[in-house]
Length: 388
Ligand code: APR
Ligand code: PHB
Image 1 (spheres, rainbow, N blue to C red):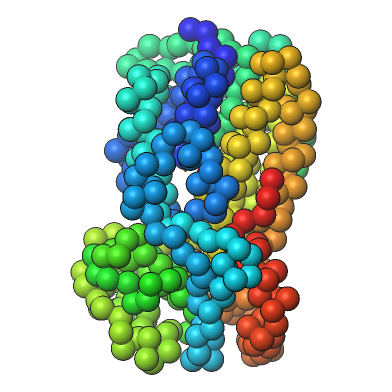
Image 2: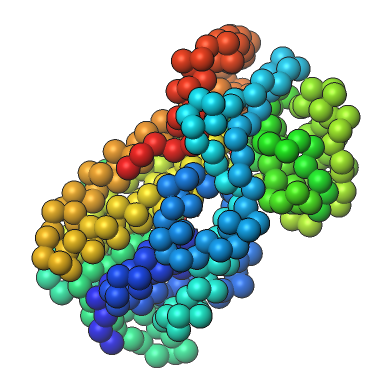
């Protein structure tokens, strides 16, 4: 088989890149290890920056997003039993859209099937080859047969554990990592949200987040220990802990109900440099991970794709400037989002090792933040997303 771009991974990065390349008439194939059902079963964050929405518009996959997505003009920060609104609209003139990553993935998959585009699911042993030369290729097995795809470029959209980054010689990779000493226990439940905007709460017992997927479905989280097992958290225990971390008047308004999804996610910051190796590019979680505080993961994946697809469009018109600068441009944005996600995580969570002094520093910073227009503007500008 032959194509222009071989994409490894059909998560949001791979699917969005595929949709945008299709608009440009650039041929591509996507290879995915899992089934479509498995991919759709993964629950991730749900806050889209305007630039992500713009790319979904450009890809022609945003009709449902505009119908069902919830535009949010602000969110609340909560500490010392008080809530303070960060007015994104007043501070930046921008808003964000609350729409689950699962729904984005669904819309991209539907558009792909409708356009008859080629996604090979359940592909086994996918491996990129020859990307240090002029004619790279990808091999994989499917239904017991081995196949080869010759291509101009390989794009690794295969997440943190995928084969793309793993196939790069270790000596030319620079990786930077921070693992946080706690996780997030998250639930989905079909009850109305406690508030029409998100609430990020810093509490002595740990962080809590009130998020949502719609006006009738909530996504709530509490910071938990990495030793916790999801089976040990009954719904009753979750609701009790969640409410304890909110101000009394807010907790009193929480409507509880049975959860239909419950999971624990560890928190990590991770970056690989560079993001291009000859004729292979990395996009999204294959190159970087952020802790979920601030919901930057999907937005960063989208901005990588936005930069790369523009660069590939230029390349096929005879100009390789864009692909030569992809890594540098993408990383400039990645590191700023890494910084914001790390800072927001550090500000809102209970860190066992920093003790009472660390708690006092957090409260002082939060107190300053909500009284300083300048500080709130810095936060808001990062939350709505930096330009690229
Ligand atoms: N062969 C083929 N596909 C693979 C392989 C492999 N060996 N290994 C992994 N994949 C697939 C995964 O099954 C997954 O569907 O690559 C895809 C990677 O998708 P994501 O992990 O969702 O990463 P990405 O598309 O970059 O999306 C980034 O998703 O992980 C979240 O928080 C992250 O919101 C961010 C966004
Ligand atoms: C979510 O809805 O899952 C979510 C929202 C905001 C965050 C993180 C996760 O900062």
